Length: 600
Image (cartoon, one colour):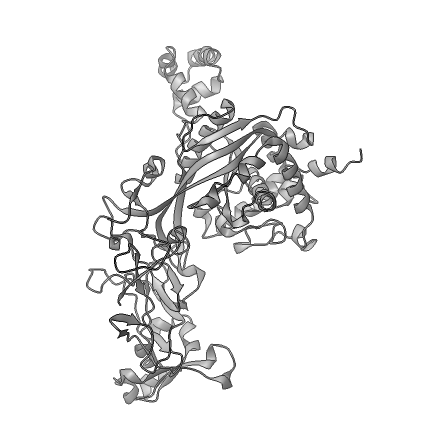
């Protein structure tokens, strides 16, 4: 396969057209190779200590992209044509031959017709490998090959044709590959049956399309399956993003450090749970303003582990936001500027104001997004790293982009939130999604759907839909970040809605202006009012099986879903009833609309 220089928007080089993804450009089907093929001279390094601390050894580099056509000396991404097999839309000739025209690679047939990439490729079930289907080999296998020696030993490579037979309708039965050398033909419908490629002796080569045959890769033991070239399951990106903020240590960690530094702490540890340790723990607790249980927990080493990478990142972000909320007007002038606002004197429904404990106007924030790797066909398949070169172990290169934007941060009252989610009917409602998540192959990529997460996640979607009308930003330009976890030592309960883009789209000021409490509270009420009526009701509100893998309850495109690029979980784990209430459950903000609609 030949190398092709082309370009995309910078943000698209991470998702959805990152390393290993198929992208259609001007009638050609291309695939981006791993970062070891990049010219690092034009891929400048991006710094984000918080992100690299979680990723480990390596370096973040921005893809060598630009916004115009790629000239000979212009820094640009490298692509491989995939699939290499194409057919002529004029003469139906099927081959992987590529011609040149005036020294450049040509995408036209000898007859002058345009070459169209074949619709099917082969993907490994568990190894995340992809490869071309050898159509000549496939056309001369099957039942006819076992009966006819002329078919089995045919070598007429230039006589292969790809036909669509109008007499057989519009399905796969109408698509045939025929060799005019031996006269054999096979329907494409035979290709998609279970174990079809295995029966025809086509095995997984254990490598990616851009890796050369002599790269030392071992054959893969898993079966190949034929899939459509544009199927979404062909590329499942493993991305991670972090806000580049001066990370604060969580309050529980700070408290633990103070406890360990107390002069009586050593005696608590020495007594090892005896009667004296309880008395000393009481004294330490009174001195430091913590509970005796916290002191005894630190002495026993019961602090919660770091947990998942994203949760660990969010812990530091949550602590930083809390510090900013307590600081009032932010005059630091850094890449992380947040004005903390209180709700004193704000006019609005008390049922809503009482549940919000702080608002942050995020005037400036820097986000770094990186691509760790990708999987194919199955969410549980092997992870292919973004760097497959010689440095992949000790200093891998991760594709990354940096974006600047603004946003709104909402902190909710932990005491009221905990009291609401302790209700049995609320736990039972969230338990439906917990069970389905546990049985889903996407479990490791989704947050645990405890009640607070589902409610705040759904509220973030409702607010994004409303902000799209008032802020001047398109809905797809807004992002969410949900802080909702009760299992961590520092319980979190908040949402961040922000915009981050590589151009002026991220810094227009529309979100910061609407983050003023006098403007934000009416917007929240309007968002709840919009969600109370869905064009798909009563079907939507009564449903408990919607969305991908049935991981949504009462949520659909008519009320709660947003662009998938705006959502952390790809429009999963949503439920209007846990926000607005339903027939069997009280929502987190169930009484807000009742209060607003009361006659005055």
